[in-house]
Amino acid sequence: WAQAGIQIFAANSGSDTTNDGMSLTSPCQHIVQAANIIYNNTDNQGSAPTILLKGGDTFPECVTLQGQITGYNVGLITSTSGTGTSGGATWGNVTGTCTSNSLLLIADNAEWQVQNILFTNASGTSGIYGIFVHQTGILDVLDGVAFGSHPGSYNIGTDHGASLGISSSYQINGGTAWLGFASLGSATTMTECGACTVTFSGGPTFTTYYTLVGAGSTLLMAPSHAYSGTK
Image (cartoon, rainbow, N blue to C red; front, side, top):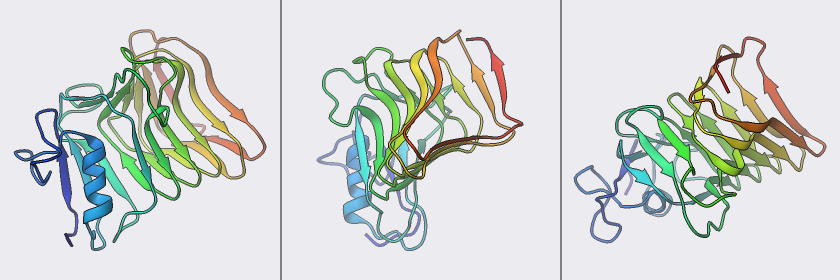
């Protein structure tokens, strides 16, 4: 399909075999299928494609997005309604093996944005982190994102020249070993915006806020950064 601004929907009630994902009445069942449609079947004609996750649904899957999409550099993943703190889609609670070891892995020059989603693995397998950006991938965290618990792991991480930017305030409502982790290399960066507020809800616990490992790992935080709530 050659279509500017294409929207692909995913919902627990959907189907990856009989639905085309083009509407909420004919959604895919899994995020990975929605991504496959955008990567393999669309020319985005100079406008960002969007994956829309049904608000209130939980998607227990690990998804890897690699390489650039056709016709535009950046894609968006968001909820059809609500936010990560109220009524939006929940991404996580994966049990069993997760090949990428993360709910969302952005890699190999892929460029994506996320919005209005709760990332959590509170009732899933220990050691699976929320978002990881690898090997020159780029991810921008927009408004309405929240992080739940990721036992034994991280909320966010980067390595090998990847870039993760937090462009809006966000909430942490579950404990984790590290909030953020950057490692292995040149131009690996995590950036938190100015005038952003990090809200702690429910008294989450974590052992380390950010960890930087290896030459070239960079964390940039604006001096006007603010924190609310207790941990």
